[in-house]
Amino acid sequence: MTICGCPKGTKSLNVTHLCCGVSSVKVCWIVLLNATMDTKMLPELPRVLLLLSGKRKCGKDFLADALLKRLGPERAQIVRISEPIKRHWADSMGLNLDALLSDGAYKERYRKEMIEWSDARRQEDYGVFCRAACLTINREICIVSDVRRKTDVRFFRETYGPARLRTVRIEASESVRSARGWSFQAGIDDVQSECDLDDAGPWDLLLTNEDADGVDELLARMQKIVEG
Image (cartoon, rainbow, N blue to C red; front, side, top):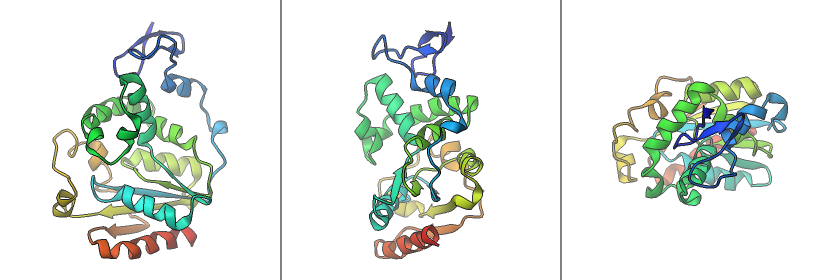
């Protein structure tokens, strides 16, 4: 018997991990992914990957959604590294996936636990969640809206090559982020998921997202490095 990577640590036999609290026949996607995934299974490479990073409430999701509208869904898509984490957490714990994926208060109840659980999985395979998220890529332009770690950047660079990457750092002051609903939380704002890229760079584009009147300019600058 081995221990599954599910939040409750379900026991399993061979490579089939039964997720606890959901169904006696449900297969743990992480084990299946680790057992079967290799580079030959990756989808066709996009022309450009735009990697967005920044602190909580800096506006990453807002700008990603707005840029997608500019580029058009027939050409571009948004990929979130956190989606397979939240999907697995929702399935295992019986939570609302849509609410976990939204930018609301619901996901904040579980953020610390999801960070701790996913960090443990990354110790085993730093690219496990990036690899899972990449299975959904099917457009020429891919906006990755939640790059948080140096190993995330490493994964995309090694997998797709540096020529395809465009890195964007989005910044906003603490006062602006506070006005958007941010408040410091120990175990969340002082750990790797928030701080690992603080000393990273150089960035292809460094944006300050504080003024609603300046959003169009920010979007134009992002579109320029995508189209260039």
